Amino acid sequence: MTTEPAGGQAPSQSQGGWGQSQSQGGWGQSQDGPGPSQFQSQGAGQFQSQGWYGTGWRLRITHRTHVTYKGSARASYNEARMSPPTLPRQTTLASRLTTDSQAPIWSYRDYWGTQVSAFDVMAPHEELIITATATVETSPAAPPPPPLPWAELAAAAAGGQLLEFLMPTARTTVSAELAGSAREQAAAAADPAEAAAAIATWVRDRVNYVPGSTGVQTSAQEAWDQGQGVCQDIAHLTVALLREVGLPARYVSGYLYPKADGQPGDEVTGQSHAWVEYWTGEWAACDPTNRGDVGERHVVVAAGRDYADVPPLKGIYHGAPSSTMEVSVQLARLA
Image (cartoon, rainbow, N blue to C red; front, side):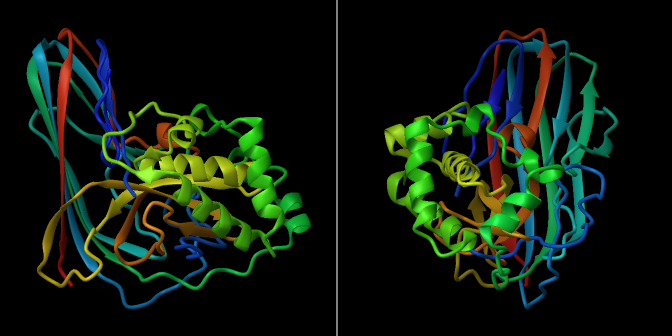
């Protein structure tokens, strides 16, 4: 399996299949809030919003993945999660995914509400090229929603969909010692929102952003222990510690336009990106890697418990002993 890493990680490879990862690298913006969104009212993790609107940007994203097999793949079975949804803080004006094969592409919403483009290439092939393009209008960072008191938050999060975002996963499990330190951070905060901000800052102070320092399978605890990682690791670690203090938290994947001072007409090379949302009565967002708000430079694609729920590309193939993957992301500010 070959997996495209997120935000500066080195790809990992093994025989038998492949997938693609996502990551890269403020607090308190409400990315979503009360009421179902157009991300789909069916999955457990559907996006919600408090309805914040403002003057934002128009961005065009071109995400190209080129898989080259060592030999011929007799068949491959693929899923892509590269299509930004329309949400209260972003409007998708156009979105398209194509491949260099003649395979038909069909779409569905997965359990988490993410749009999935699935396609099977049944003829022998030595390479596979997937190109996803989208034009999205985004909104600036919104004021943080007022948090519930801790007792009310705990009661609300004790069941239903929110409980899934309190449970640890393989990538978001940390030691009892680290969990205890996180609870000490939260205990010193005035309310849940302040606790979330303190934990996000604590994580970023501890973990340096170092491209290539981790792999797609790196866990939150491993990133903490080595003190370095990429945005995927920083997001996983922040999610893990928010859950340990009782805050439902989810991993968000998407894109970040890297130039804060970008002007209409500016096109830059970027990467896929990962950040965090946490629930304090409404969903709020933070980008711990960049220590900044989630605003007009961010484009949401998917959210889930961790990276495993939202990989941009994953699949399996038969025939070739191994494969390599090249990924490029171009972002243009149109307005």
